[in-house]
Length: 67
Image 1 (tube, one colour):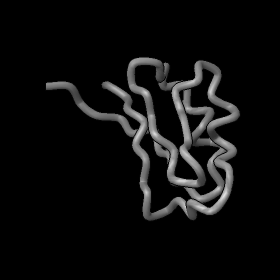
Image 2 (image 1 turned 120 degrees about the horizontal axis):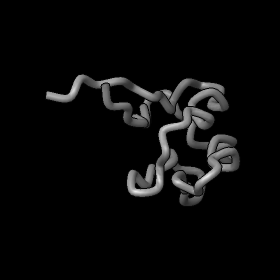
Image 3 (image 1 turned 90 degrees about the horizontal axis):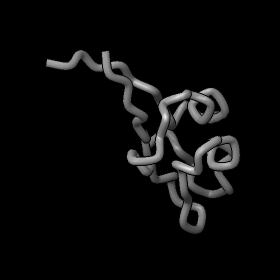
């Protein structure tokens, strides 16, 4: 199974500094102004720390079946 971090913008209030950006150990999340965070998939190690920190469940680590 492959895991991928998904940003659900509808769940993100986008009116504050995202706490999940600060906990990413590899700097794979960035936020411009107070918009929803953007994932750099080249850097993301799929550890799940950001999704556990997100108070609104706007960041979800999904599992996909590779075909």
